[in-house]
Image (tube, rainbow, N blue to C red; front, top):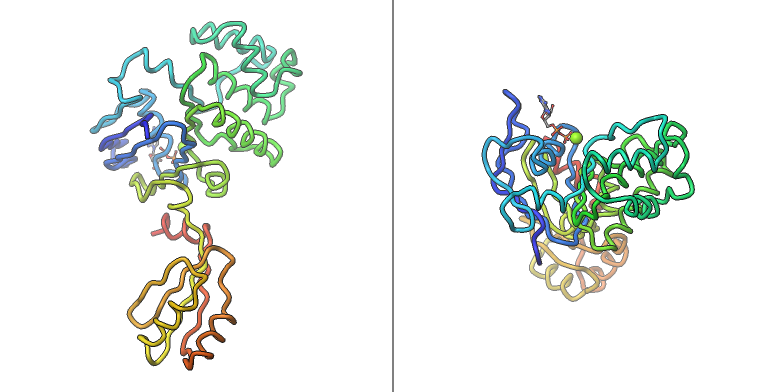
Length: 298
Ligand code: ADP
Ligand code: MG
């Protein structure tokens, strides 16, 4: 897979606070990549560094596998904080200002971008009359000027109501379908799970894990069983089928199932019919929430 962004051993401190600790990360082209972590974990710092807004203390990064240059920077769109739009100007006029300042895109691009973020019908309304969701969509529109190949969004749904959140999520999905690589910082597990293909989990500036969402946030039922004769039990469970994997712990066997697929009664009767009396039959459903909590808690 082609790489859009690679980060190598980046560290950053603000005086005594170590915001990023030796971060190494690769972001594949075409992914919707979630940077997931609680507040203060270093997400904004990471984004600021790769956008050249902040300087790393150590380490390096590279976009598109190329040396950092002004040319490459034009291929990246970003939304780190809500831009200062003029309240008394319309969406179109605000984008004209953005365009003039950034030098990205042109008048035709303004119409295209407004269409993408579904503000065409309201393009002549004043910014002050927009809902928060519309304001945020306009901000994403501004970041899309100049047809970037990558889009960085820092907490794009913060402060929005459920309808606004759903609209932003749909927008992100449609941008991903156009082939734009999207990097999203979020403290919301649910958001990352719903829209991202990949995720990196940050905790206090340290990368805990990264990879495809379905691998990192794998969601499964785990059933633990034990019996007097563990060897016999192991064979019996292996013959039962229906599970994804079996793991042996010291004094118990863990049976892993896809979410919602474990059935304690069935396991119990299968063992009983094979002459085994279970001493332990325990369901340990592992929700994404508990896993994230586990990963990010002390
Ligand atoms: P996140 O975006 O995940 O909430 P940040 O990157 O904003 O995390 O912050 C990471 C850590 O760095 C936090 O402890 C935060 O308080 C600290 N920090 C961020 N910006 C500054 C700053 N300008 N000065 C001092 N400390 C900062
Ligand atoms: Mg932040």
